[in-house]
Length: 142
Image (cartoon, one colour):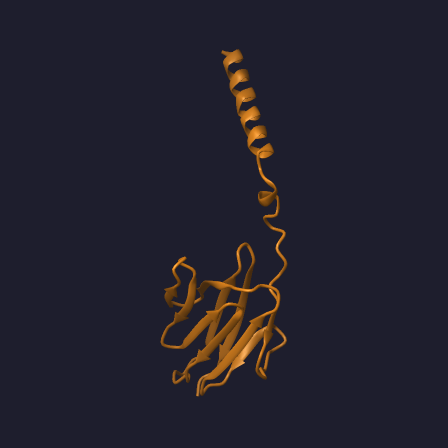
């Protein structure tokens, strides 16, 4: 019985070692992506905690990613509708509060007027593969 357990352990160890050795160079690069670098294209007021302030009347933002040629949406902190391209990469998200669109490395976001009596906090996450970036926005009520 001990021999069977020993042989099973040896087989599992060998299989694990073979799986690790068979990883290609591409697999070795996972986790080695440069952080996404985004630049605001229009004058934007940003708080010290990386939160963009949105006017109660609504605001449009345009950002450009300086080190990746394209990106897609990973999600938002609120319910959104997604529109994807032929490769199923979401390039447009929207709801009753905002509309955000990615075209290559450009991100355009239109926030609508906040007619509610509460502050809106929105986060939008984009990706370019194994790298992610989250934008944070705060919109006060009218």
